[in-house]
Amino acid sequence: MKSNNKNPEIKMTNVKKNATPTLEEIEARKIKLEAVGYPFNFNYVESAQLEISDKKLFEEYAKEQWLGLEAKKGGYLFDQKIVPDYGFKILEVEPENSIITEDTKITLIDNKLTVKEEISPLKYQISFDDIIGQENAKNKIKIIKEYMEKPELFGQWAPQNILFYGLPGTGKTMLAKALSNNLNIPLYLVKATSLIGDHVGDSARQIHDLYESASKNAPSLIFIDEIDAIALHRQYQSLRGDVSEIVNSFLTELDGINPNEGVVTIAATNNVGFLDAAVRSRFEEEIEFTLPTEKERKEILQKNIETMPIKININIDKVAKMSKNMSGRDIKQKILKTALHHAFSQEKTEINMKDIEYAFKQSKVKIKNEVKDMYE
Image (cartoon, rainbow, N blue to C red):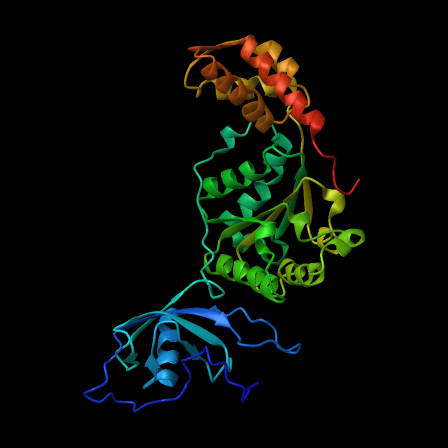
């Protein structure tokens, strides 16, 4: 991978001076580096993206091979061990034109360099009472509650993979948050798109890391939203070149090939028909989330009105009827919030039916102009 053709602009090479600086030479106290990649490209050499698991370990690794080199701002240092000829640009050196010693502090800035971070669970202050309706879903997830509280009773019959499906805004994510809060266990809330890596192997690693962290913190819940983004049905796989890698890695975890005791996976989708058949078959339970009834819409309105910052004088029964086919999130975000903002813009101290009617009008315009599903 080396070339005898030297670029005259590169003034820093891995040519060592004395390991111990002389009196005329100055010891480098601090050096800041940026990973910049290879100085040339060949077809059989990928533009590598380094992943540093521990910056302190990298510092020791770097000093061991660069000990005695002169460091100059704007110069370069090249790795000659694990990733030969991979370059690091010297952004700062203190003092200028100094020698790297065992006491030199070497730091890296994140650019092409990525540092592996532990995937951390979260906790949410949401209760089952905050979710209006969805009684069928609430009843069905009782099996997860039983398992988390008495895992010794289940053995090989433990619930592992549950699928939530239904229209957006119907409470799928809220129910997962409420379940973890009720059980007081960590919840790994993940958008499926966040598991998609930039390079081959990234997605598999991120999925593995997710389950590894969940196992360490078991009992725990993994909630993967918009699962169809990484587990598309085969007829759509041409849209995503890396779908095979992602699906295979995900199947490995769902099948329990890696022991994930005390970990339950809940996946959610708005488009259950778009899921890869192999992935869908791994979910032992599919739970549908439906749009709220008129009675439930009235409850949603009343619950949200209690938290509004100004008075509201509306006909709740009428609004409940008007909001037919709307989800709870639609009612809150598209109707009540829009009505509140309209009232503020009019310098009003009270929301009335004119503000509500304005919100419905705006909502209908947006729905009418929405782009249809890309797969239709």
